[in-house]
Length: 366
Image (cartoon, rainbow, N blue to C red; front, side, top):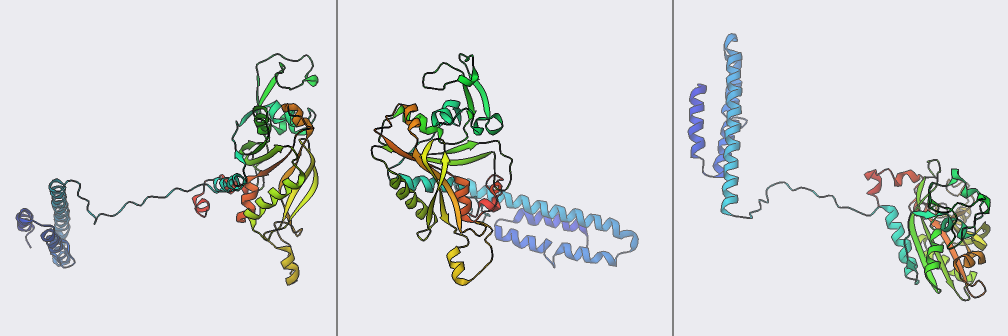
């Protein structure tokens, strides 16, 4: 075959193309399995040895020319369509998939918890992540010698400008005090108890979600930053039984109606009496295992059958005094929970670091 005559014929045929169908027919004629280029390529072995290399180069050049001319002609058809039909959408073009965003699992759990408490009349309030030492500790009846106030247990930032006290141990962080006021990254959302109660009068029913910070070494169960939800209610004649009823309603909404609860005596400086709240293990269902006579130890509750979910108690009278409430007139309760802990129990997650690694394979499961 004469390649030069094929090139001349190709130019003529390209100019006569007037439809996408005829263009496709021309493509098959030249580039198809039995087309012109395939015949030229198959003829190479029949040529003398000294002609094969040069002839092969000419065939490749012809192939590139055919592909170029066909592409250009295809583009000209596309431009003609768009000019004659403004806004034309070619449905034959491949689509561009759009990834749908979704809420982070911790955000979902925070929303679920807050929705449960707002359904009971609680108000959701958010506060600053940089707090004063007074709101974070002193106002909550946490004494200066408490370990949580040490520098290795709290992220202190810088002192707020003020008048230093001659004796650091005699610092009294009261409202309107002129002594040095330190700033810190809040170590719990309980600090908002002080801010809210100072600015509002009872009755109060508030939940406070937010990030908190503690200088903990990061491992499967700890992080230097995590999320808490603080809740508190203040009014006349608020009793411990009110606290138990509200927390039972919350726990059963989150973990299921069949769970059981228990309150264990504990100590918190800002509540008296205080209690930690446990739920029956939702992983091993200890009582069911007993019925089935299974002896395998649960890796979550370690065979105890109970899981701690939060701390709680009746607000200490000293906290009321610090915010200007009359402790003889008002009573109230408070509770606090770690959001990551609730989410890990709810979804069976065994490593807190998964929440913060931004691995889409993990996040897309929620």
